[in-house]
Length: 339
Image 1 (cartoon, rainbow, N blue to C red):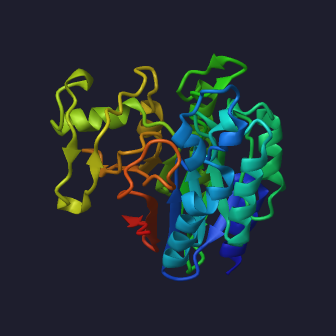
Image 2 (spheres, helix red, strand yellow; image 1 turned 60 degrees about the vertical axis):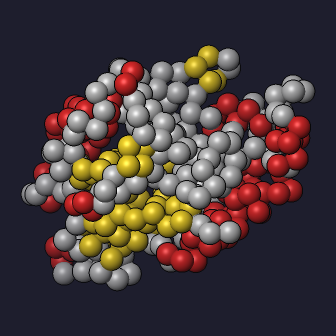
Image 3 (tube, one colour; image 1 turned 135 degrees about the vertical axis):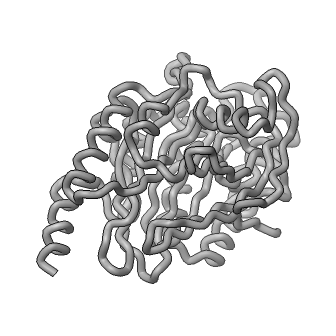
């Protein structure tokens, strides 16, 4: 008991930015991604949207375009934590910040801890990144921290099982790629982000005297995911791409319908070499939804796109549920929304 209390004190004193405890033997994490809410009335110049898109993405239709879907998936899963892997809003269509505030209010209505990272479209809003971050930081149930590493939104979450033991670490990371003040950032992790993950992980493992498995959560898939596909001979190279359907062997499932083609400089090898990563979760490519395992045992998962904004497959929308067991093994499945 004393040892457990000491561990909790260590966590609160800086080992983690946040802690989430399981209520049962399964800690349930629900992932949403690429909601990419568009307020058609806020388009910056006439003609940016087609006439039918202006009607379809009227902000008054946000309930039927997104919130009904989110409600249904949350009700079906009853998660302990909700993670959002980027592109909450299409920032170019939220220069007043009203859609981000609406979305935050929706997430707060669930009274469930929720942890977001920015995607490559969020920070395009003229309300500024600082203003957007302040809105997240002020939300009662939002787990978000700007972090000291490069970018905005690098922070850690410790998962405690229902026996009181730490059994998983989640690193939330900003993967860049956004157009800010007319300039597109590189989609990658800066060295300070990589160093932060590695040093934080070493500190935690030294404290617990054991390796602890980790999830990495961010928006844009890295080169190592593409390398996993190449190793599996699922395609020859990015110029010779064909849709891939996984046969559900070994728990793999889903499809790749558009070429991931990550920037060649977006690599996470240094993290994978120094941290015990067992799961990587991302979005960005709206009609990809596979979950596959690489030769090193890392499971790479495209989170199922949420909502009908921007391009999508209407039959493949919803969220992705991850259930982490007390022994740190985990199951992944998509929760499809049927309207």
